[in-house]
Length: 98
Ligand SMILES: [Zn+2]
Image 1 (cartoon, rainbow, N blue to C red):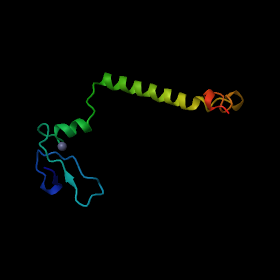
Image 2: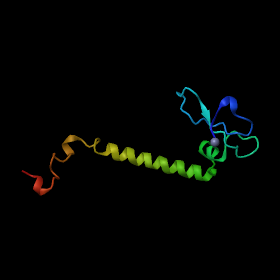
Image 3: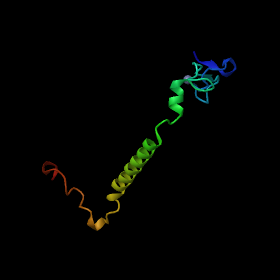
């Protein structure tokens, strides 16, 4: 049911569904979720963050912890001075040793 912008009517979803590089631009055009809204329920859910403030804070804190852990894990080995790193092949399986 998508439409070009000049065929959109009041109460039809304005979510662009074609890439910006497309020659003709199409919009969703499904009925909006409520009077005065610009998006249908599906696209409103996609565009607006409706998590409660407490949940948003908890999620942000969790993601900050994940990023910190990833940074720690990715720099851990690099931060070890070469003289303290195990020699190459030190942990190879017995059958792999020459
Ligand atoms: Zn829509």
